[in-house]
Image (tube, rainbow, N blue to C red; front, side, top):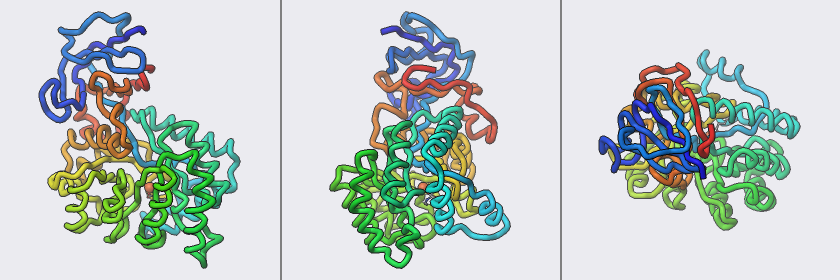
Length: 388
Ligand code: NIG
Ligand code: FE
């Protein structure tokens, strides 16, 4: 196996507290990193670096683990820029807008959906994302949900069945009938293409009892549970996620003390999605409160055409720092190791020896610039499984 050494690293973020400065980020200054095949084979100070077959000088830049975006909805057609403009003129966000994207997605060909998906994944990569989770949820028929997941599977193994995004329009008068479809024939058709099952548990979508039924049906088929909850108001969704040992509960904008306690004593990650609050002009979640209580916290884009049409993890980091009480280091950890935890993955989200060599080289001397220089294209190069 040939080895490649990255040299000229001004600052290396390993996310290994046993390395470098001993912080959670495990920062090493004037570092080198050796890649062998798909893996990280060595990290440390450049002066101590071993021999490698070839070298690549990153020119005094910072190197961080590739971002792990654990929540996106990239299988869709059309956009909802008019709805965004109406919100910025004072209208509020509701789950109902999802129906417009469902109609556009159903009308699109497989080729159109695949092209749109590829374009958005490429956009993510250019911004340093090396692992992405992708949900269905804009099909809402057996055929449209399963084709959405089959398309998503072509670009990632982290696929999530979200037939329970809203009640399909054909079932408007019969939500229980739709839950039967989701937990029956739709689940049967989708489970082979999915790793996870998710429900939008919110006013205007599914209540806690429906969500519990759907998550349990998915678990019985071997899917892992994750949940959208507490986005638009208080509710019992976060408690349900902890009750069913969901790997993650996402949004968490409105939390009671009991919700925070439940998260802190569970293994469930709270995934915060600041692109949503930005794009719906809503109050941001309080990341500081969750971190101080000892909860697992992740950051993700939630990229979708309705509530958060951004593919940029650097934007989410900057918002989390400026608006949600996170330090730049906490935000970077949440966007890397936090996202990996939210996908139950231990080989990504860090750059310890043995990790997958998923790496972002920043056009900056320090990771601090991710929040310090918002809106600036800061990703110089990306390596996925050791290849640029
Ligand atoms: O995560 N919350 C539910 N689903 C998306 C929004 C989908 C849409 O508005 O199209 C979200 O915010
Ligand atoms: Fe979402």
